[in-house]
Length: 187
Image (cartoon, rainbow, N blue to C red; front, side, top):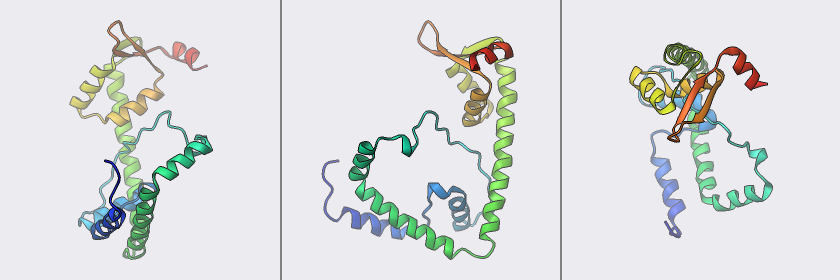
């Protein structure tokens, strides 16, 4: 993009102030309730679709790299600070029952998430029984066609002691070993 014009941050802040809704990922459930209220919806549960495997925590990033990240993201950090302020103001002005609605959303979403996990687990048991192997891409396509949450499938696969290896064409293949083999691999 090149160098931003001097007024870019001020323009971005002015735009953000015009938004009907500003949410914060770190306070996801509260953000969802605010959004649903802004749109005039009742509580609509969600299924966890966040999969972060192998991502280092902030404390694992060396100090010199963190300093570079901060340096190169100063404008983003300033805009985020405004977003946090707008979010906090929206929460402060939320009507009575907001905290209860957030807790109810969490409970409903946990139920929806568990149902998605159970659906994915049952589907995987049918599609990839113990001792069988299938290409990961084919499994994902079939799961998507069957309406199985891919995020739930990934989480179930991680729990099911699946082995992932490339086949002769370089395609990833998931193999579902028997319990004894999976136990040996886990140890």
